[in-house]
Length: 273
Image (tube, rainbow, N blue to C red; front, top):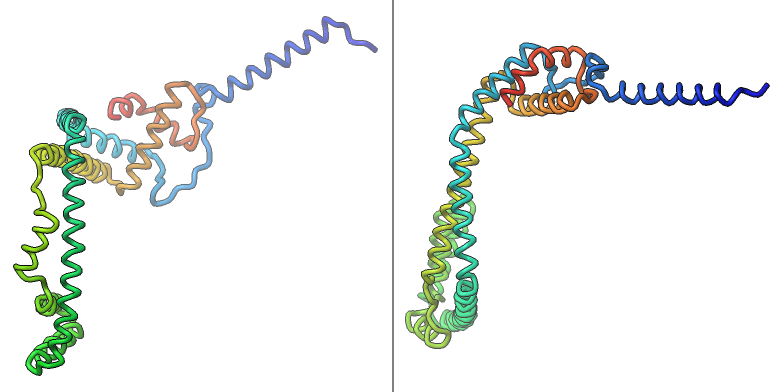
């Protein structure tokens, strides 16, 4: 028997309404306020009981107090970074040229000194063949070095290695010859010194900022009674709760008991975050 068109339309509209109602119900935090999920707790993911929520709120409040000076410190760090950026934009090409020139000279000098040391080593080997005294000296140093290595005496090892290198090290005359051939290594330019100073300022402020944040996190964890990792995870889960509650979305990753406990302190949590 054929179903009247009006009845068919009514049935379709009813199904559509039921589907919309189901979708809204799945999304609505109000409709699923206590509809939690099974959560596997461990040392890092702890159950958010009323007592633990109190502890996390205390920790967040303590952290906020410790970070009271953070905005000013961030502003100083950013100002130093901006000043460095402006300096490099203005003098970057000059600094690059100075560093390139210094690198070329250092490369030339390193190569020249290496060749001199190789030549001195060959000369020393030839000299040892006709010098018993030099042979005895080398043997004595080698024996002392072996003993120091067996003992693991780093200081003595470094000292004896220095004595061996001194026997073949370039002389003052060699150094003068290298400087004449390659040129003396130029010192830092004013622009380089200023860039280094600004970079040090920025890095120092960065370190102060990290120390402040680490101290605040440590104090927050201590005040909460949780380990640092457990506190961080609890905070993250509470932030997720607030985000979903604000958008009236279904809560995820929380048990019904946790949702109830969090809902009771929602305003306190939001204020502490």
